[in-house]
Image (cartoon, rainbow, N blue to C red; front, top):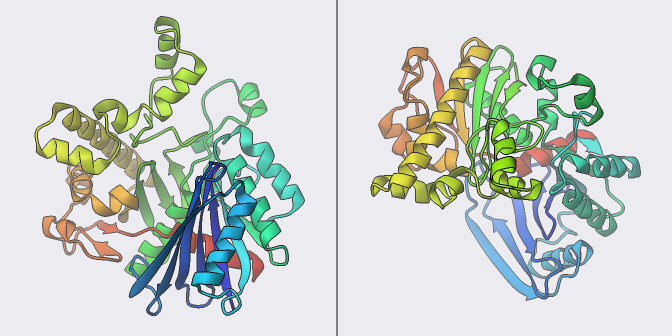
Length: 408
């Protein structure tokens, strides 16, 4: 069947993975970065050793790196093709049958993986008003990839698509309706590819059908979101018009009284650009403790640092608040999953996030929670009414799967 090339493009970099379409084994991955700078950098990792399990490493990996000028994304794709030719695996032996592209914002227009055409490119460009830092960069990657692989289909997989099942009550903000409609102001939600993948992996692990299953998925990384999922469909999610709303994150504030911005604009003479930076780059853990990495926060808590302790407590407080709200929205919960960098690797966060939810049949077994093992694993006590899981996410594999759904 060949392979699927998955591309995640940023403004000055792009990541890629080559995934075998039949076995779903990761054949290679790479990063092309510092595009447009005086000297760029490319790394290319060849993976081998048999079929991967989800969340598990292959038996061996070999990484090749090079520094060279990379003036634009088109040049970056040439560098990627050279890496495949020189370091493997051969694209002749594993010919890409399609290219899947991560696109951050699909607005209300795109609710499923979509074959990319000139009209779809125009729509992605128009939606840049809702994601000015992401959609233009995604589009650069799409255009460069279509030039590099002109004879195979390209598919856009949107971060927002999974959340198109939200009800109007869940996605509507209580502001002037005509103004909101005119400027497409509503909750869209993000991390949808991860939430979809993790919820389906959890159901498969438990041997349960998605129908009738009530799930809460915490995607906790530098960016963080939580989604309530019923019957395999997103019914509530924490991120909103942008990825700023919701949980406390590495550098983003999450939920905030909107009047705070008005107050600071008036009293501290902050501009729109200042407020943007305050919320997106100087907020969250960074704003509270001066560091954005949860590992540094936990180390600070353990050494008795006041700022780190406060940041951790605020972070956990928000997680508990959303967990309680989503249990209410779902009318109970059957399984809770933690994923992404913090969710998969921070036992203290998982334990504290659920520590007050025993009344709902939710608990964490300390021994299971402390174990460092690969793959999906339960961390709730044996026989607990609610199953708590750690589920490694694989957004690239999910993009590959969705790409094949469109291309056959």
